[in-house]
Length: 129
Image 1 (cartoon, rainbow, N blue to C red):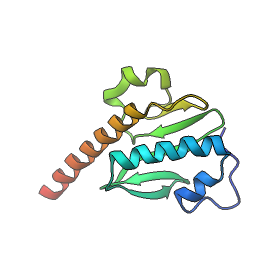
Image 2 (image 1 turned 135 degrees about the horizontal axis):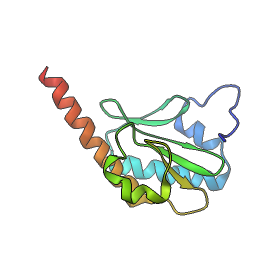
Image 3 (image 1 turned 180 degrees about the vertical axis):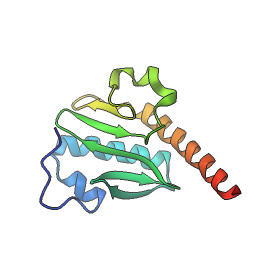
């Protein structure tokens, strides 16, 4: 179950993270820093009321829930990581990281870099047209 939304959704990632308890904030900031380090040119925004990084389109998003932090590497970002993501199985294109357990930062970094490669290839095809 999602955290109860305020009357108005967060306008920035800072505002989104600030709406959670300190322990969850630390996890969200660590996830954010890992994404930022893996994709330094990506821009931060809020899309669909959750933190999203964009680079030639949506790169990855994340959200805090009652029992986990969800990581959304867009529709096709989990394909090459099925075995590594098995303990974090979520919906088709979602990884669920349990609260109170260390985030798999190396895996997250690999997934972000994979998504950057996908987006770069997509952009090259788009520019050829």
